[in-house]
Length: 321
Image (cartoon, rainbow, N blue to C red; front, side, top):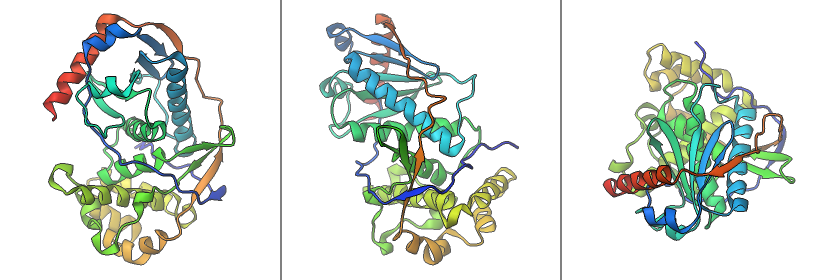
């Protein structure tokens, strides 16, 4: 068995800065053919990404460079690497929020990602709240990186690790980055939390829950992922691996969790997580750039391919209203 999960976390300098984040919104995607006619579209390609953009060259490179830096940072701290045979992740960057919203999206959608013809597609505008947009697309790209392990992670871990990774923040002129900064939405009433055992055993269905319950499920997943990867001086990492191994061997998620961690989720909240939630921390890592590929090759986009992509996104969004 070769389940590739985060295993190279290690204590370094601690920081206690809170990253302000907007709610993560995973929505559909789409576009209008008229957008393709108004501004020139260019194709950008690197070993890991293919992008089509009608935004300025400077803004496009800034977005793609940050996404590539994120890929390298996650690979560095969690040992999650893109296989050589992997299909490149696609990115669609629209020049303005107006063009982005004309894809049929809600006013509060900052960016989104979808599966597209067996590929992963990220869609975002080049204008707007860049910090919030990058948080969303980094969350979604974390799912891609986890997916390369070919292991069916429980939803709490899939979402929790994506939330944990998406708060990566580059500091010191991009020579270092933080990992584990807590989102402000983590604070919620202890008597209003999503049931921990349900979270671990079944996950959750967004469509059947109130907005606050969905929010709490994501935040609890973040807290649990933070604890099992960074907490107790990294002593939980072997337990996390045992948990995944037991699941692969056929045990239910909750039974495997209780066996690996010595208690179920509700007991863990009472005995560990409640106090842990009050003394959260993040780590600082030196940013290693030996695998950084920011030399994106630019060429003219295929107009017909862009039009088709925009139309596909518009139809998809309209069908998911």
